[in-house]
Image (cartoon, rainbow, N blue to C red; front, side, top):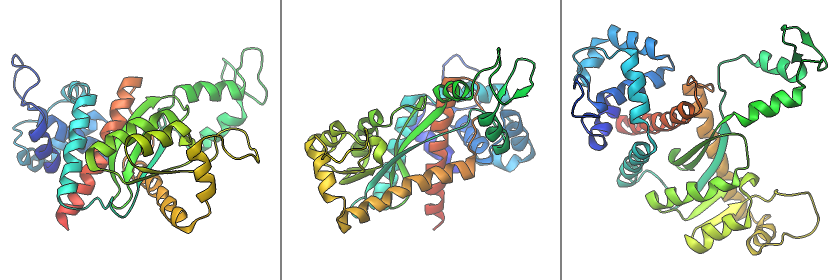
Length: 316
């Protein structure tokens, strides 16, 4: 909480408006939001935790506890995309200065994952896949007159699924860039934004990604525009024995059996490790009710993950 407060003081203005009551600074409210996300609780529960721990309030200079409505407004105000990008810039710069990124020897790994829109048990998820529900709540094995088929229900949920794509320094698990959106669509369009932001912040030499990012355009962006060696698994399109049509995709097909490339591509699993760390430490379900709120909550989880890494390095 103290680390989040110190970082926010370097980036955020003291108050959101000169006409506000000036009871809490934006840095103090950001530290409270980080504490709430770290514990994985609601805003009301975070208010109770702060009230029961006056020492936490003293660490960041708070004289009283902000209520849950104040934290809710601060969540929407602070976690705008510009503020999040500046915070990522600062965190990456601190790791670069401490020589902890390790991008000279290990690649940048890109991958994406989806979050649940609400908490539900795995058993409930399995039952929803095999059965449809009528308006009266009766379970039937086949879609009735008023029920929806399993495929219809699944396609609707996928269109509203929150998705997080990240670019990770495989040597230290720091997230260099992130992109959030709604819908479980193709991963390939996210490659340009993820790589360009990470390249701007840290200077990338090698990038690895799975077949979801396989595209001739993505290879050209990495190799010709940024000078970054791209290793992307082949897999887009229908299975065929013919060689790929693009120059760089053919290059991937020729080098896929080389041990050097296989060793670098093996580091792609580090991005999956980061996704596992986020979901294990902060949960796999989101608490926000709107699509925009879910996007902000996913970006907050990215920041909390990086702040936790920074705290671990400071303790070492």
